[in-house]
Image (cartoon, rainbow, N blue to C red; front, side, top):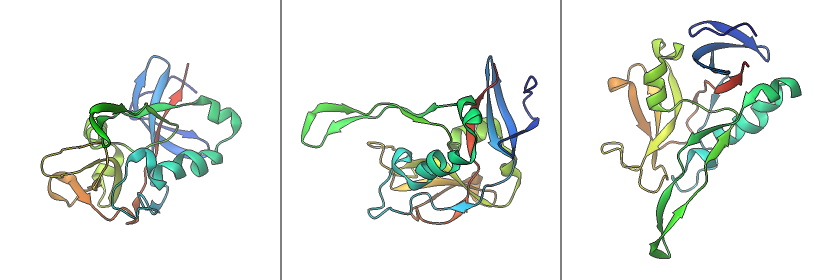
Length: 182
């Protein structure tokens, strides 16, 4: 791959990707077009989920990943996309439980990343899944990392930030990943 430039598009795995960021030996890419509509968590039975447990994360990092050759997969950099969680253990409030970092080959952007990178989908009138969620959409309280609502982008939503409890709603998916370019 030639030296990547932010704003350019490249082909990788037969898909067109937009370059969002370039660091020394890697580039952050996002699909130029949606790869289809999927639910965030179609197995959700309790209306409580985390990115690392949702079916969208599993689909991206298992089935979607398989569409790439072994050589291409070696160029995909597994990335920590969630901060380790620290919370009180339900069996003993004095015990702090920390989950390890989650590594993903592919992910969808968080709200903060969407604002930072301004991907092409922001100019379109469509609902797009984001990775972030909240216990309380008004205060932004993440509680113990379990989401009762999850964010999605919608150009027509007030300030483009919207929440839903319908984890199985089918919204567009724009995968992102870090590609080794060194």
